Length: 196
Image 1 (spheres, rainbow, N blue to C red):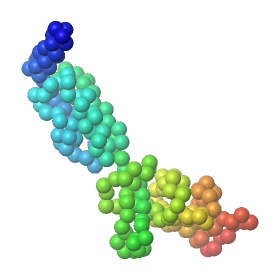
Image 2 (image 1 turned 120 degrees about the vertical axis):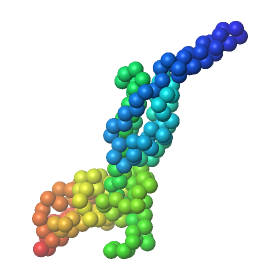
Image 3 (image 1 turned 180 degrees about the horizontal axis):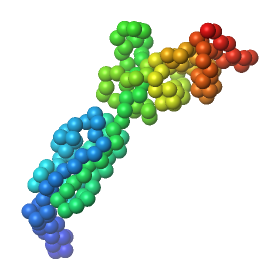
Image 4 (image 1 turned 45 degrees about the vertical axis):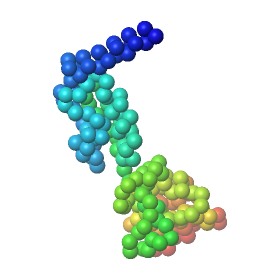
């Protein structure tokens, strides 16, 4: 019992000593594009004069809870300095539900390249479809970030690019087919149809 009390007393003294003798003097933020550096510092619970030894490990856990943060690293590169390095998620696709209307207001869920939902109003690529095949459609969106729309369903995958429209039964075939210039290119088991 005495050892436990002594350990707690030493930990308390160490915490207070680090707060007084080793305060945070400077906070650096790297990699933030969407999230403001000031917001990241506040969300991490860091502030000038705070405890330099004890706060950074907790700060990383706090920041990792943000849906926009893909990876975070909080380090102490020098005495009194804390550095926050963040890699943010980027919106990749808008998963359009049945209420989506071409050219109108699209209702749906915005996801990143891993399929994680993001609190964003829009994304570069619209994905329409039902059933299995979403992971392959997301892979197509990563491969063709300028696509206008990607569709998927039991019959296959569709890709709408500025250069033309493409359709194939499998996502891998579609990716290879998109290199063929044309107005509308469709791959079937018995051949390829090109309409200019």
